[in-house]
Length: 470
Image (tube, rainbow, N blue to C red; front, side):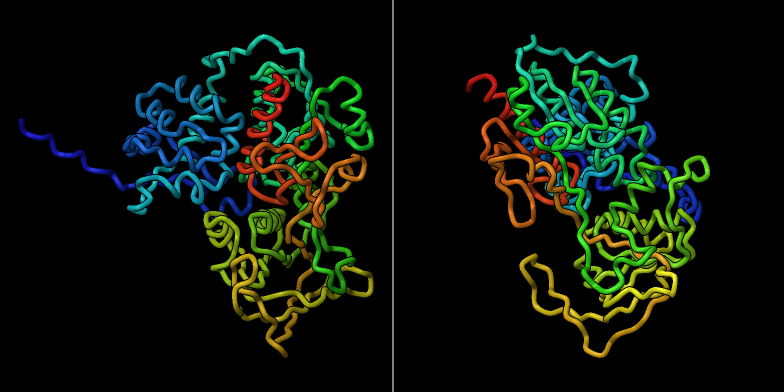
């Protein structure tokens, strides 16, 4: 019998349409426009459904990726949604901000041919279909209530994921959020043009639909301590409070007017909607020449916000080279297309002010790269005598964050590191304190949304086992 010829592998990855750079640099509408039905079908049809399924192992929340992609290919969108949401409570978020290129797509079998399946784009397509077809949603069947109660502190990606999974296990969950809107960093940190807030709130609503109670304006550590929660009837507590305390350069001039931490700058812009002035009159300095210090995704978000707020020129000031920059390639590319000016191998020496205490300039050093440091990246070294001055009127410091110390300082028996992060088991999220788990940025320091979700998922499984006496 004659063997059938092997089907030819399609290596033509389907690009996602974007807004034109000149247009989008002046608006807050979403930059990436999403796949059409035809594009999604074409991309899903590229998946070779390999038996080893390396993409699943590359996903921090273990989504059954080949299954949901097969459902898209078969035009069974209800099944695609079911498969995706059985493991991921926030797929519309992950489809937009998860770094798939270093996780599931990196280990895709077709990555060896430089053409991995666009898993993130398909995830977004399925999640957006679900949001637009809620009448076709199958209700989540929950088990009988266990009678156990869990408090989740923080409604960011770790807290929401942990809460959703615990609810699916049959436990009663209350989420306590310090701010007036649920979503954590998804609301205050990531700009509208990258992650629309209505999408975040739709995902929050899904978690609520599982029976999760979300209490806003609840600053735990002040309203109640962890011990008081445990004493008041909660069987377990999960800490998902994130890392909202900004780090600074510790150079002269950082206290001048017009200097922001990226956290404050993005919170004013995103959560408090400064970009919608005068509908929202949140005060923010609209600089003409803005310098953003840092090279991560938060720096890119800050720079692109500054441009949209009305700056004439926006600089990214980074002490290493493009190669060492930790931001996603896609975000760097988008920033460049929009006209952000990159000042590589540059580090601030001091910020200079005028006679009224406002930023007027920044003195910088030129840098060169030495041997790799503990991070594995080449260490930046100051070029002696290389000082120069940049004319700027706003400076945004985007160097990373550490956890707010409020919970740790009011919780007896909780171990923390020198960086202020909570010590917890990597696999289970269990802290040294009885009946207390933690996960996400409060444990790792600032990291990705999907890694926080993975931590929330693992902690939920551990809490469930504990509550069921396993």
